[in-house]
Length: 84
Image 1 (cartoon, one colour):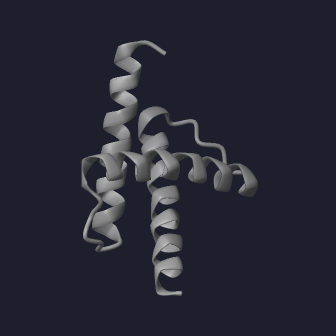
Image 2 (cartoon, helix red, strand yellow; image 1 turned 60 degrees about the vertical axis):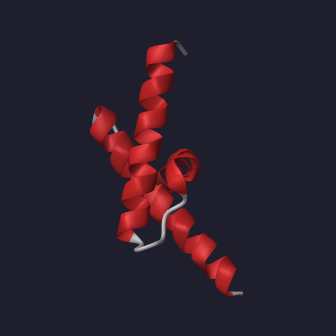
């Protein structure tokens, strides 16, 4: 992975984390937290989509949507754990 791919990866992670926080109406985690939520959400989204047998082949937009769904699931799980 070269520096350009790393920057794109982090930017997409930050975007997805921010979008998921906006959708879930959370207070936000800051830029580093949003990147982490986006990256972990992308991993979780990949696992969920793989489990359901859904194949995302639409490039960057498909990856963003998959990561966003995973990040929303992650934030929902965090919210449930915080309430317990």
